[in-house]
Image 1 (cartoon, rainbow, N blue to C red):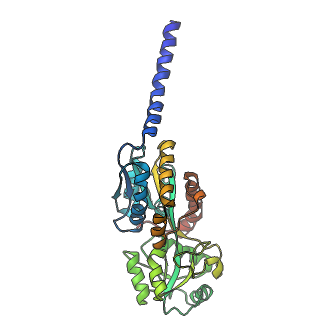
Image 2: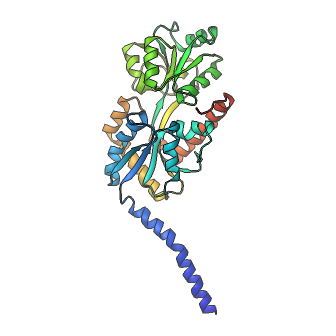
Amino acid sequence: MKLARRQFLQLTAGASAFPAIARTANAQAYPSRPITIVVPSGAGGPSDVVARIVTERMRGSLGQAVIIDNVPGANGTLGIGRVARAAPNGYTLALSVSSSTHVFNGAIYALPYDVINDFEPIALVADSPLLIIAKKAMPATDLKELITWLRANPDKASQGNTGQGSPAHVAGIFFQKQTGTHFQFVTYRSVGQAMQDVIAGHIDLMFTAPSISFAPVRAGSIKAYAVMAKNRLASVPDVLTVDEAGLPGLYASTWFALWAPKGTPQEVIGKLNAAVLDGLTDPGTRSRLSDLGYEIVPREQQTPEALAAQQKAEIEKWWPIMKAANIKGE
């Protein structure tokens, strides 16, 4: 009986090791087939553009095709939900405006997934601090004068955004809270439409990405008061930071990151992170992103651990602001 028991224990121990061995072997062989990156927005949008630029270089690093699958709808929740439900094997990933999909959406929607616990962070791909801009006829010449004018004219100004919980809307709420101002929100179907109305003078303000605003700023069609970041932007180097303009700490940005389903092996996460970093060190990739107004963060901020820490810090910052403002998903 002792021998039979010993044999049984050996067999069960061996059987329990098979899944771990299989996972290790699969991770070592990864990738052995094409990888799909879900972009939870339409073709041509910011996430789609960033994904297509970065994945060009990733294909060479990984030795496999990388397919972009646009899954728009429900403010990104449809595409992100699909990734949350995917097998955790590294072949279905998400690249998104993660400040929205992995921070804001968690505060305003009853999601079928958890923005923290159902994903593995891979890498922060690009950052895009928002600019505070206004129509050309706005009488204020700098940020301090703008705040003074807004305080003297409550609810007379209008700020364009793409809806409740959008980056511009949340940044506007944050600005009002920090400055004691109040203005109206005007919702548009796209950021481009809102920008056209600022240029035409139909609305007064926007808090928007450089990729949308730097061309009219350079042309003198609108006023730029500050960039909502610690450092100036290469795309509009003459625009002061909020710290320099007299409103320190008023930081807000849209940032793009790559995620995998929870449980994806760390060896796979490591290979994907290395492929992203390889792409972001390529001069051509960096130049194309910079030309569109996107910033590439320092290397120490491109690790999975740094991305997890950024998401945690952003949630701790934005969720109380959004809940206090009673922002609800549309």
